[in-house]
Image (cartoon, rainbow, N blue to C red; front, top):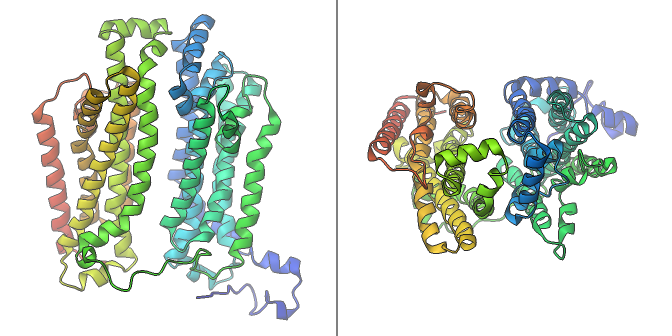
Amino acid sequence: MTATARVGPAGAGAPGAGASGTRASWTGLAGTGELARLAFRRDRIALPAGVYIITALVAGTAYTLRKLYATAAARAALAATAGTNPALRFLYGRLDGSSLGSLTTWRYGMWAGIFAALMAVFIVIRHTRTDEEAGRLELVGSAAVGRQAALTAGMATAAAASVAVAVLLSIALPLVRLPAAGSVALALGIGCCGLAFTGIAGVAAQLTSSARAARGIALAVLGVAFVLRGVGDSAGAAGPSWLSWASPLGWIQAARPFAGERWWVLALPLAVFAAGTGLAFALAARRDLGAGLLPDRPGRATASGLLRGPFGLAWRLQRGALLGWAVGYAFTFAASGAAAKGVGQLLGTSSALERAISRIGGQAAITNAYLAAIMTLAGLVAAAYAVSVILRLRSEETGDRAEPVLATATGRVRWALSHVAVAVIGAALLLAVAGVSAGLAYGLRAGSAGSQVTTMLGAALGQLPSVLVLAAVAVAFFGSWPGASVAGAWGAVGLVVLLALFGQVLQLSHWVLDVSPFTHAPRLPGGTVSAAPLLWLGLVALGLTAAGLAALRRRDVG
């Protein structure tokens, strides 16, 4: 289907009307300002929240490191320990010195770049391919709006978010007493990383006909960039350290903030942004509205037996995403588990932390605490996956794809339970991947691979009841308040993440922390397992799911 937007009088932008190339290009951008204001309005909560989290993460890290490593000797010891651990270099990158700024760049510079890239990808895809897939751009395009206006508005919104991150970090980091030049270099490196992936996401939005596939392409590029940088940074002197230069994430540290800044490196992500933007506009001009440039694969002549029921359909819709999540889990938690071997010595370089470590039982206790923390992280991310699977029910409903399924002998509850089953199976699989990967990596370095795999697998699966509670919250919202299901479910995830990350730091009361189901999960390895909290979590998950399914039976679909 080809849709041509009308701008001004009928035919005003058509070549046959005698319009010049310059005028045609401007008419293609007609309405960009209005769409950009609409994009900012739609993202008025998520966009400031994302910018704030990235800024607070980096500035808060600098403040915390100053408190924990107050002397130059302590910072030098931390740098020496971290610089010799290949797993830590894979996770965080190489260290360029032992100053407070260099440690801040090493600890969260690259990860802040990842968060900026994720923010840019989701913004661009949402305001381009998602709106196009839902038919909103076809409706908008029938008015006085140019063909390139939506792409321009989406990329401008993402670019503005990246620029805001850079500006706020340039202001916040000197406030925690970091050198101004290094602060600006780090801030620009993070912001330019977001700009680079703005261009990449713009290209991805032109390649496929679905928003899910477009996000998958952009996130796959981000995953490859992380692996290339990780392999390059963790390689020894004789290894392929040049791979770090092939990754936009590696350019943040290659600019050497706080260690003799190399400003010219910042031209690399800007070049990617410019090239991606140009390519995205060129590709957008060559395709039909609603179509992608990559051809859709034809399906089989006859469906497999698995597709005879709703569970097979739900599995078919979700299996690609689950595979991507599983691969990411395997890489991330293998590296995290390998880093556990030296984490006790790493934290012991701080006198304040060393005293705390001694009180809780020494190096073995801090290693267990670290492993328990990364298993909690695995649970939080698995909860986000489970919620995304449940919310696919809402997108199927609003996209009029649920009605053909429900027109058969499949009932509403059975249809919804098929996606719930995929969420449960997928979350359990991801947790198992996290536990096995972390246990194997840590066990190989500690010389006890077999026992550590079993221990970490149990620690990971101990997070499953908490994950299921958040999935059940999504089911309850979908069944009872479908219009608020997306905001409500992701709001619950965001609240739990904030409590997990900052609850103890802010010294919140126990009844506030108890709101999070992860507060009641066992802290394994090293902790004790009690059946009562797990039983209560299971009952809460069952109750919320039952309530959501009962409400779904009573309400109208669509």
